[in-house]
Length: 441
Image (cartoon, rainbow, N blue to C red; front, side, top):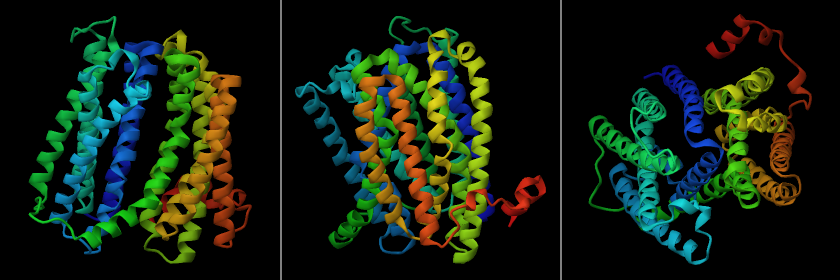
């Protein structure tokens, strides 16, 4: 499959998944209410952080080692599977350590802290991490179309189940909807791993080998992963640490309102993320000068496109949030006004980071992520206790703004680009035909 078609499938799947995710958030919020949504936010974030922290960002390094010929795909698969089993045991042990320290609520809300739910949490971790590895193997072998179709199907499956729950086609305990959602998540995770395993076996000749990769290569693997790992962990906390702080000071109900505002605002990142995918493919193979020019134009498209979508979305949210989510979520609109101040400029960071990665400058994004993590941590623990939910939104916006400014300054200084490049708009960007020419090229 050509690069153009691969990007088209990936881009199309991303748009569809974003729409499905939006619909899913409406239904699940209606089922859970504000407090249940807050509980689900903590549970989902804890799963995501566990996969990131204990999974050591292994998926991000697999394509490099296979494509460079440094590791045999079969031996690497065996090594990674053993790592997944080992890290799963570590996750299960960590839950007991958190319980002993009186901090289990960081991962499991008070209503689901039994052994049964510890096992469910650990099982979802195992399935999620293994799913990611099999996904990245398929992508490494250029199975973009199949992976895109799979991602859309298994993004749509939860929506179907949530609709059946919402309309009582599937009966459930309305007094404890969050527990039902946890069980649904676990079952769907199991179904998804069966499906991706079937795809893997059908499409790839790769099978676990009898040998592991050499120890010297494991050291290189760890070294290669470490910078991406630290950067990803820092980035995760930039996006999600405020959830735990809000929960700690104001409880699950207020977190539910806050998390909805954050989720709806971050939907604006769909456009720059999709553009960043196109840029990465282009900037990694084009000349330095062409890549810089292309980055500037795409950065302008991402920024002004996100700004337009943000203003439009904010206007619609004022009327639609009470209708779609309920009156108890009205405050989410006021929080969105604060979030968008930082989220719109962050489109610049998304594009520039993709350019840095394509040109091999991983260190720049790493230092920015770690620096912003330290800044956002201080602001969350300072502003949220004093100003409540608005303090969290203000802290996030400031962090995103600083990241955007640093990325832009670094980009302009490193590649000798005018600091006013964002405002030096080519006339071709102001017409539909001009935009089509840019992406067609």
